[in-house]
Structure formats: structure tokens, C-alpha cells
Image 1 (spheres, helix red, strand yellow):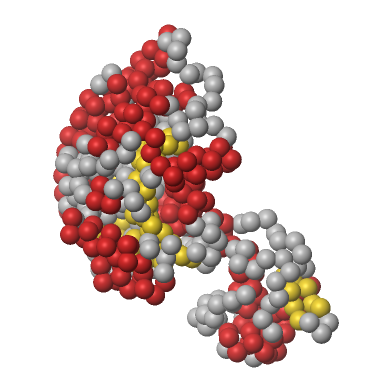
Image 2: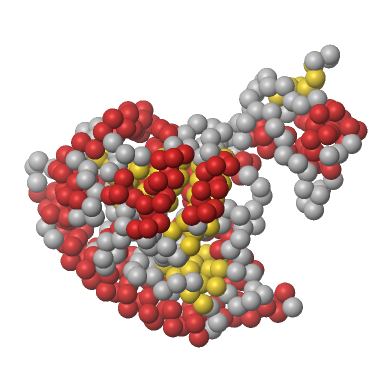
Length: 473
């Protein structure tokens, strides 16, 4: 069992920090019931504290029933672990940058809350009229699957249509290489179950979609990250991370990267795949924003031919968050095994959502909706960028498409402080360190341009920035 070094700048006594380090190892399941703890001398040397500090820490943990003392043998993890707590698997985070707290805050938001930091489009931007029309059409169709489970792979007709849509982006995936899921999130969860074991290392971009951090903690893996640049991951640091940490898996967006809006370049894509081949790295390419693109960007799965890259997508961001429908495209032998995992963990997928998505795709409603959505987002991107620049926020890049602007605050301002101040005015922001594993994005905020058009937002944001500046002066 490995216990991390003491952080002498952290709060609490040395005894409390030793106790917290041991608890963290147990809570994250890195130390199973019955595992022997390091000796008093060994732990004292490793954590650079006195033996008396470790003795007191062990005694107090034993009194709490967390560990057991066996005369002549040492200390062992108690026989029964407490229920798994996601919050105990990593360092305590400021709520303003905690991904789970941010998700709860946005989903529980009352109607009056303004949400320029959230990750989805306003309900008024979604094709509700078309969805209602499709629902009526399904209700009249005696062949539609309204009450039964779907087939193991998912609705065949939708998988055939998805195969053709992927081909338009250069990804060759036959229908039998595609499996439907309830969402993009379920797709990644299933793939983590399939590809990694507790204790494995997974590589992420820095910054990246904040829920990746929480999900991977739930899978009890080690997470490392590499900086994401304007055209993809920093290649030198990417290679260094592969050599030093030997990650099993890399999860990324190649097009319309979340949160930066950047797009992977062909040169970087080829180099990433070459390094992945050399170091036996597998890649999950999350492509849920694909339909926002004006022109298709390079896809890792297209260059790779679905050899070591698995491609996923969904319709939650572009069609409806209530109609849960996503997909996985991968090698056929992998798809068959992931289908078994899906059946074991959720039995059968929902046929109804798949039928609804298929209806909207086939009758042209989705195509028309997406065409209008792209134009609307492009217009909003320009307007919001101009307004943010006027109050001192600088976009990191001007994205080619999509809904996110990654903006740098004026020097001296901390995004978490600004977010805490803004919530007092019912304004929900997305501070940069929520997306950064290394906490290197304290000067950034992510804005959803579709959610930042309300005229009340910019004055409230400016006021929050001013309050934050005064408090830090």
C-alpha cells in the first residue's frame, strides 16, 4: 500500500494529515480489507514525519475501526470498507471548481438563474415542434417499438444511418461495428469498464470536459494530463507522459474541443496516432459536438481506421437532453464485448429514443434544425466575443464553430473567486480550474455563447469581476 507524502502547506496537524492519507487510500479502494499497512518506521520515513506521529495516527484510526492492530504483525485495513464515496477519492476541491458540485448546481438551477457557464443549449433553441411531430408519427406507427427493449446492439435502421453519417467524416464503420447507448456519458463509462482496471493510468487533455475527472475517479484509476494547444495536445509533453506514466487510455475531443473550442490539426493527429502505436495506447474520441461543425475537422478514428481508436457520439447536445441516445463505433470484436457489458449493467437499451431519433433524421427535420443552429451559433459567437472583450475578457482562440469560448480574465483575477461572487447574483459561471487536472487554468472562464445572450449577463459578470478585484486587492 502506497501513502502519499505530507503536504506541509495543507491545513491540519501532521497526525490528521497522516490519517487523511491512509483514509484516502482505503476510500479509493487502493487498499482492500485485510491489506497490511506500512510499518510505523516505514511510513514515518516515507512521509517524513516522526514515528510518534504515525503511532498516534494509527491508534486513532484503530479506535475509529478503520484499521486493525494485530499483535506482533502490525496494522491492517479493517475487514469492511465504508460505502464508496466519490468525494473521498481525490483532494478536497473548492466547490466553485468541483465538477460534481457544478453539475448539481446547473441541473438544480431555478428558472431565474442565468447559466452562461453551462454545457448545453437553451431549451428554446431545440426543435421541440419537430420532436412533437415525430412523437405523433411514432404513436400512429404500429411497427414502432414503444414498449419493448431494443436489440442488444440497438435499432438496426438507426445504426445503418449512423454508419452513413460517419462515412461523411471519413470514418468507415459498418452497422455491426456500432452499438447504441443511452448517452455519450454511458458510452465512456462502458468503455472505461471494458478497457481499464482500478490503478491503471488514463491520460486527459488539460483543460478537458470536467466530468471526465469525476467519472475516472469513480473508476478508481490514476489520471494524468497534458496541456491542450490550439491544434491539439502538446506533442512533446504528450510523448513524455506516455513514456513516464505508460497510460492505458487517452480520452479526448478531436473536433470542437471542450472547453477550448480548438480543433485537432492533421499533423498533430498523425503524430498522436504514431505515438499511441509505439506506446500501445488506446484512444476514446468523444465527438458529441460533431454536428455543430461547418466543415468536418480531422478525426483520429478516420486516420486510424478504428484500430486503436474508439469513436463515440450522441444527440444530447444537438437534439434533446431528454431523448437519451448515443453510440459507440469500434472494432467488431470490441463492440461484441461492450454489448455484453451493456447488457450486464443496463440490460437492454431504450428502443423508443432510438426510434424517435431515427424519425427525425429520416424526415429531414434534424438536418434543417442543424443548419439553422450552426448559423445561429456563429452569429452568437461573434456577438458574445465582442461583449466579453469589451469588459476585459480575452478569447483564447476564435473557434471555427460550436458554442464554447475559452476566455482569459484580466491579470490578477481568479476565476473561482469571480464565480463565487457571481452566484450571489444568480449567475452560474464555469471557472477554468474545474476543467484542469493540474489546476493551471485559474485565470480562465468557459462561456456558452448560446447561454450568454441575455442582456443582464454582461453587467452582472462585470460586477462580479469588480467585486473579486476589490477583495483580492
